[in-house]
Length: 438
Image (cartoon, rainbow, N blue to C red; front, side, top):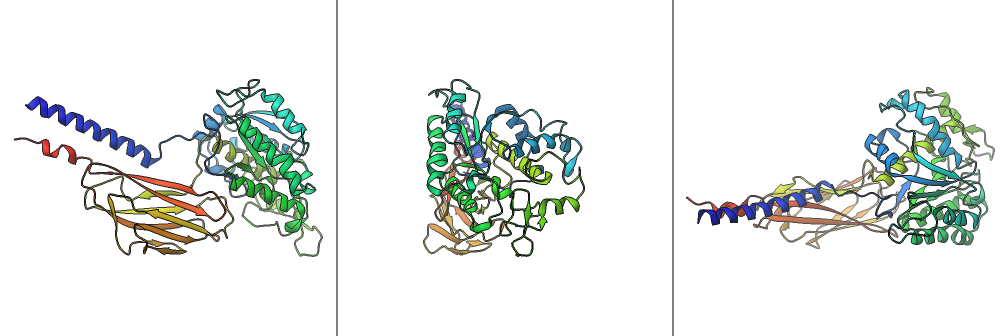
């Protein structure tokens, strides 16, 4: 009899351990997500721009993972060389402790990039060159049979975006890129915008670049926004409304003449080899290529699987709870890669096993509503705030051991909604209590 109870006890205990372990893995986010691997397409857009230039924020592990796992085919001419020139100069800058970096020597060296030409402005040459280099698709890997190691393809522009029409941008760039993605699903195809040209926010260049950016966001693509990086200095000052060009010249007083240079001004007030580094930078200044290199490494790390320093997420005040315990949930909305004035709606339906604590819903801004229980709602916009925080409390009403998955949907207007979940382990020890015998 004792052995029978012991067997039952062990089986139930093992089941609980499995439940707890699986739920804990979900709760802590230990599910790997490597884009440039078996699943080459993002579940939400990855936008690399002036907000992703903090090279000090990239963990060493993801730099090394990118070097080990990425094999990049990069088509460019002179403007596109800014990424490579900046990356070359970054090696010695980091070795010398620039920006306070303290990493192993030459950590930014050795990334596998196969360079080619011309650029995305030469259609259909860039498409034909891509297919020739990759070779016929392998249905088993989703990559090309000629270079099966290649898992990232990126083509830059020169000056062609300044004059291309909206229709030709679709026919000669957006549609061909999408077709390549469909034909080679095991490869990440990185979209890019064209360089600034001094025509400002009403120019064709700006309009076409925004067309590319919106397409990337709405269709969950990966975008390196070359143009956006040129519109801001490292302090976040905006020059896009001042006729800025690719040399970083801009009109400071609105008289139509480019009389200042944001990159040179910044370099002259900061310490070389500490705050910035000199490097060859075609058509531009060293600082511009510095920022292009920082953003490029942010891109490589993201493609290697790094989620970035602050993705939108949902968390709970505890990983495990018991019947009758109150748990506080927190939703952080941030880094959505959308205009800050975009309206956002949030819905969070309280799942079975939890009971909402009346009046506990609140948020750092925006409008929230708990009248539609069991669904909680929030609406608002980022509007310059780095993040929106939403909190509420719920009581555990399930007396049985197991786990409760609590999900929230974040839906920016006209963009793809995203879902974030938290898994709560409940009553982990209660299953074997009735088996205790005297």
